[in-house]
Length: 294
Image (tube, rainbow, N blue to C red; front, top):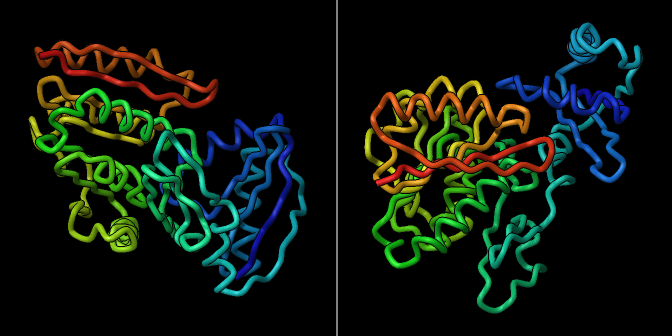
């Protein structure tokens, strides 16, 4: 296995991150230091020829990148565990997200809950802003609907590692389902359920947006997916909501908020179901919460 490494200057970080987010499957991993705004780009390839060809392709879009990145040989085991370097325990409210390899050493305060997670190569450690936006939506929903949580259903579209689905179940939502196009993601999500003694409590399946969602099936629908995909499936997402249900759209760039809200608002009117909308952003990424008015 060949590792390609390159430092990324601050003025190139955002454009490169946006470009990589458009890839469904990518050999690249961009780690950004939000204090200095500089970044480090890693790519993993089967041989040097593949690595150099990929670099030429990336430089055809970003000519500012250096001609000669650092190439090194890594063992397969190192590649499989490389993601662990970037996953540290973190907390939102009384919920703690903890790597499985720190389960014995991490202290969870009394009355707090912990989700022990191994994302493997599936998206979803909670370190990314879009995942955190969704977890905030789950927390808000649990607080707002606490009286009847056991009777409610949460659906996680594009479940990745299962972090959102498992958190929703851990916080008390009665029925929780998650689906993803990637069979490896579904496998990892089920492994994370097992690691948390939640095997069988969340229904993880391999499916896509077009086939997995049925009308009037979700009280809370989480969709941490790229904006263009969300907008393309706006009708399916909106009709899946039950009266009074909440739809959380994440994976949206802050600059896309108005356009996404406009598309979903127009689609909701055409479907005859009014919605209320609110948005949050951190300057780069955003989350839009839509509530189906009864």
